[in-house]
Amino acid sequence: MVLEPSPPVPTEPVVAPEVDAVRGDVVTPTALVRDGAVVVAGDRIVWVGPLAEAAAAGVGDVVRAAAEPEPGTYVLPGLVDLHDHGGGGASFPDATTRDEAMTAVRQHRTHGTTTMLASLVTADRATLLERARLLADLADQGEIAGIHAEGPFLAPARRGAHDPSHLLAGDVTLVRDLVEAARGHLRTMTVAPDVEGVSGPGGVADALVRAGAVPSIGHTDATTEQAEDLIAQVVAGLTEAAGPPRRMTATHLFNAMRPLHHRDAGPIPACLAAARRGDLVVELVGDGVHLDPAVVRTVVQTVGVDQVVLVTDAMAAAGMPDGAYDLGPMSVTVTDGVARVVDADHPEGGAIAGGTAHLVDVVRAAVAAGVPLVAAVRCASWVPAGVLGLDDVGGLVAGRRADLVVTDRDLVVREVLRGGVPVG
Picture: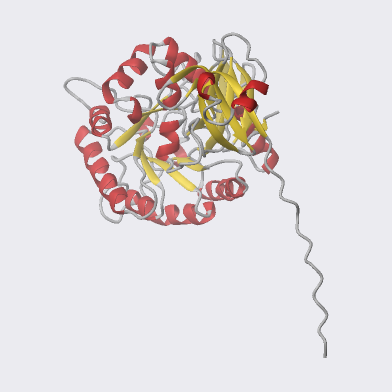
């Protein structure tokens, strides 16, 4: 018997990725490279540096073929937002379809936020689990980096724009159900250490760490000691946990917290001291509304660039005109770009209800406040990527995903690439 040779198995031709370059003044994690370029092959960054060094690096032809940048062009990394409830008229806490959620994602992506957590707000159990399942689908598809749950284990006295009727004492069963609904994509959860059942062995904070989610201290009326105890507990748990290193955060430091007073210190000194030690990263909503610009500048100078993340706390009105909006179960009115809870007892408006800025706007405001450009961009890209344990995004570094934001000198976005593909 003679065996006939098997026919050759057809193979797909190997296609080399398209190589291109983007030129301008390039903001790397550590420096501003004047007259530089970022070389992209497919969805990866392959080289970053000054034009004068391109030829020696073997990318001279690609860089020379790139379009001449307009004067004053900056090339930034894709920005990373850890705290974002929505935009473009859509809200993650209110979305019931993929299209609604993606409206918010696209609103921020087209303005330079190429990686983001989708933030929920306090709601009833069924709604939280339903939203987590919907957003987990987006995370599975790579559209978002995960989910941030803000509440429901928050202090009523510091609830801000959260519905008081749905605030709860610590409930480990709800945490487990939320983790299951999120299918591994619950990345952070804002909790108040002064709420019963949050701190201590077997509490909510322990359950979050065991599930791979990072507790974030916020919406709290805690004493300094209560905050210190929770921080020490979480830091110890994260140190022992398997997986990539993660750091605890403080949800929008100063906002919805007991204020700092020299005879009643509250949680803010504990957060600042922990940040200075490198144990904790503080969120700042540095949009010019939530914080005085001097506070943003001073915190960065005091605790160090690598302990600060700039966030938007954006809600549905981001990128939209003034008017009426929803934030979960709460009605919100936006006037002159400032969102406030509708409150019959305060006709001028209740608590601030999230932000209306994009993250690039927050970077611009931080620079105007006196934070150096490289530091402000690092706080909105490299540092938050590190908080999430991501080493694939957050900086213009060879090998990372080709997420680029091209702006003018005023940080107005001209073009965005995500994975090397223009964002429309």
